[in-house]
Image (cartoon, rainbow, N blue to C red):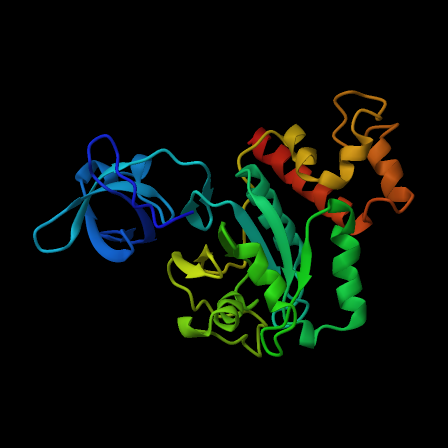
Length: 300
């Protein structure tokens, strides 16, 4: 994605929103950052401007800008609120904060629901034991997603992570304290992003990133976003959930019942694969928990 200097049929330049606030936006326009206001209708929830949006901008005499139109989006995430992203980099740790695979799987489901590519990043490798790293790799090996193990402290594999950013718009997503801002600082030291610490008492990270902002890093754009400790599943039919588990794809169509959701049904090929160790049991059990959550939501 470029700095979006093209113009539309109205001869107004197209800008890239790098930071969206309630009353104004920062827009990348012809290689410079321009503070922009927006018309009243663009303040409504239905057409709210998001970080990552492409917009038409009218330049004002004082050098600022006025956003006049929101252009169609390719993709949209609601948490974090960002548009036109290509890739979700799911960042997790085994310590400080402790490993939370339930939250990681929720991130992966949301990213797939938004039709994003997925890269997994196990950060703070310097704190992880061999058993902990094996737990993570065993959980996601069959998914086929890239898994990069990094340490922002000693620089382990930062070049591999940077290579995933080139030419893309990516969002780093993960619970508070996993080191998203620290990773970006390590890849691009001039950023000087604020970094937080994990509390000794609760082992939860403190929120240091307060708003979603697109940053120019490693030849791409990266959305540094606030972390979280809880994440709701997207609104979806329960039967659709299995489609977000690529490790079940080889067994698609092999179940006894065509509408099998891989829970209590007899003759389920996915459950047989779990029993045979071909699908990670922990990840399958989390799938069943999510399935029941969606089913309960549908009833109420």
